[in-house]
Length: 118
Image (tube, rainbow, N blue to C red; front, side, top):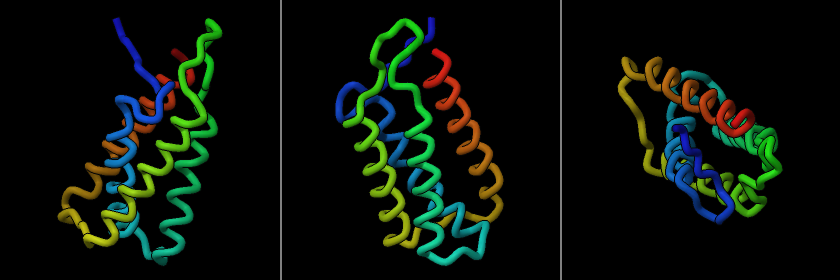
């Protein structure tokens, strides 16, 4: 049975994933595009906020599965990950960039599916 523990609290089992996503997206967008630092920050955080807005807070049975405070903490933790990656000048070898994009995309799709259809 698939159990999905989403956030009624400030921090849930996916908080670390938001942090890692912030780190990865900063590294990957920097490695894959010629976007300015400001554009990278604004665009990646815009899409992350959009994903948070699209998440379903109440499941099909009427049960609250995610709260506003958890959405806010997810956004803050993502930004912290992004900033840590930037300020520490984190990079990955070019040969891993494609694979990491794939992993990030698969986790994003899984999260969207799980949070909107379970």
